[in-house]
Length: 321
Image (cartoon, rainbow, N blue to C red; front, side):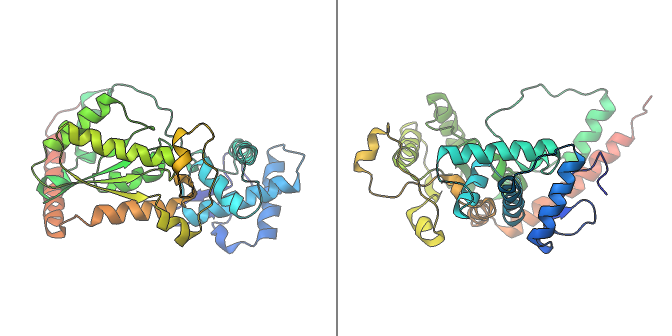
């Protein structure tokens, strides 16, 4: 029933499905899913099962199916904390982290369901031959969507981890995804200001960050420094906002003890990971689409289609050994 080279579930772009019979896990009741996971793990020589672990595994799969992968581990922690499975503490987070690692190693959770934007590999693009390069150019060629638009948009993030959640949206709409990693460096801000100044059109920055004294201050520093460097733009925090905390009943956390700005902070503290991944993607896409001229977009895509076809024809003209 469980071939050695199979994983337990996969994502088809819409829902998480069981490998063995292709059913959406949303249609499998909890008891059956628990038993399937237990049997699957046993087939991987995992002999000892604690019911609490199985319940966490179940909740992880349910959360990912509801919010769509990829998700961050902290996002899963908030989903499980809300359900009461783990305490709202760092110990609770570490418990979820351990179980996610266990699920991935067993094959219960595909590795690409979890995103980690804090680590990357840098490597120059290279090819095995000219044919490979030209074939790739013809296949993946894209026209710049915003070149013919009346406005220019960027998405800015406080946290690396959220980049993996939102990249599918910003990639689709050809929008820069700018990751600050806390307070951005002077170089990062200077380069960004130069990029914004070059835009001969209104510029819109949409910011996503934690709702806490430091997270709020980061967004204020970004605005101030960009303007000091000469950039002109409209700025909006689309997450996390005080209104979202109340509307969506987001889980809060205490202010960090060492945060010197916490003394005068009157709002709740909420991490951006507390917003479900699917809702974050919706917020991001909605902000981008406010500024898209659909007529110009259609013309760009038609030109892109014709140019990609022309590239393919050029590639075929070469004699390949």
